[in-house]
Length: 280
View (tube, rainbow, N blue to C red):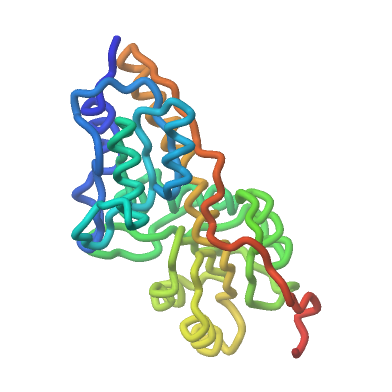
């Protein structure tokens, strides 16, 4: 039985309702005809040109990404710009693109649940509420762990990146209660402090907010783990794929489903690491 783009979009919108996205976000269908047939759906974090080319080469008809292709307003899709090249390549190849961003972040299960599972958390609850939507998760480890052991176990569960996981805190400190927020999270330090957690796992921690947060806690808990934007959100892809597969099977049909193999973390290598953690 032929499956159309419109049918796939309806299923994904059911999992990740566009109306639950935060007001500044731009989610939903970017390219494609709702009536076009879909035989292969590809999942990825970022709709970069390389990811689009990979999807086309793999024979995909639909690319589902976490990050929006057109988050900020543009006035041209000419191939003289990166966005223009991406849109043109997809349209010429009849590749539909759909983005599920903050609507996937706040979903249950969604991006933050996948990160909580990677941390091994149980008894999770929302970290914060934004525009009426649950943001982040707070949970407990099955047993307390030293901060270093916790970070190492998390790193093993994440996709490998070239700059690894950054940690702020005593490596021997015991942690049990954990807050997580996939992607950028240094705007939630107030909620993290209120939650009473031992460690906060997120990404894109900037110097001043992170330093101020550590000073507020007198350099005790909550400790900070910056696990990388790409890595913390990549974990969601397998769950999204599996939910779509199950929903299609319940309708008596299937399509090919795959996950992009490209790492779209922008960092390529790391130098000058102070491995002993001492003064420079």
